Image (cartoon, rainbow, N blue to C red; front, side, top):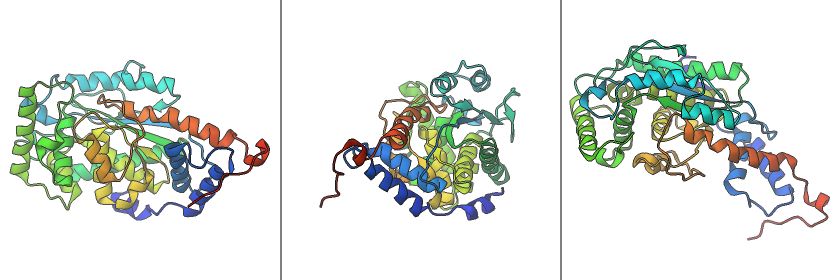
Amino acid sequence: MKLQETIEKIRPLDENAMECARKHWDSIAHPLHSLGKLEDMVVQIAGITGTSKVQADKRVLVPMCADNGVVEEGVTQTGQEITALVAENFLCTKAASSIMCKSVKCDIFPVDVGIATDVSILNRKIAYGTKNMTKEPAMTREQAIQAVETGIEVAQMMKEKGYQIIATGEMGIGNTTTSSAVAAVLLQLPVEKMTGRGAGLSTEGLNRKIQAIKKALDLHKPNQEDPIDVLAKVGGFDLAAIAGLFLGGAALKMPVVIDGVISATGALAAAALCPLCKDYMLASHVSKEPAGTLLLEALGKEAPLHCDMCLGEGTGALNLFPLLDTGLAVYHGMGDFGNWGMDAYEHLQ
């Protein structure tokens, strides 16, 4: 689907399905809403999928992988070669997220949207990395749209493969720099407030990172009212493709899980293109990165997990699945008050 067609397909959640899910929760033998966010997740997924018979057994992590030209500015601890190395390791269960996938019974489907070298994962390469945003726009507007539409295409592929829920992930050295830049523009907040140490920068490295972002923003003046312009000028192919995953999931009535700050920045860009798609997003954890809480607040999300994680790759999103599994086990497996020989709880004022 093209971008505009996708946006036009996104509709409000199914209120009837959510009400049925709430009534089912209230009917089973436990104090009302005593499972908190576990209940809320199931109700939200009912609204997303249009049925109170919620299932999330067939799940997939989609890491969008791309390189970023801004690494030339010394904003990272490692070089671009790590992007390709980790991308390949996704397929042989060596990367952290692929090891986690095995433990939470989740498939993994990495996509190359702009790695600087050729790799063996699904090839949807838009270019061999973005340009150095401190000197020229990271990509053209056409490339930004292509990256978003690649995310939409992959969401369609996952739907056709029978997946019921998508977790977002990424791999791209330098992408905490691009995500900080995009988030600073879209939220109109100071660069210093949105920028962290990423994969272990020194104080000197953090200062270089902040200055590189400021230089790029001063040079290109991305338009806050035009998310595609922001992605094109200071974003990354992975960020834009993640935005497409969120939009595609919403259009296809699939829940999509937010990971950390990079994934949440992609979610923010998607929400700027279509605010309604926020209803189709599930928060997983609060990233240790400075922008983690701010991004979730902007999306109107409360994450159930606080683990001080900042690894990326989808590792935080994957840790939501055990919580969802336990919630669904109770939702489907517990008897009602009559089965227990007790009176139902009532909603009291």
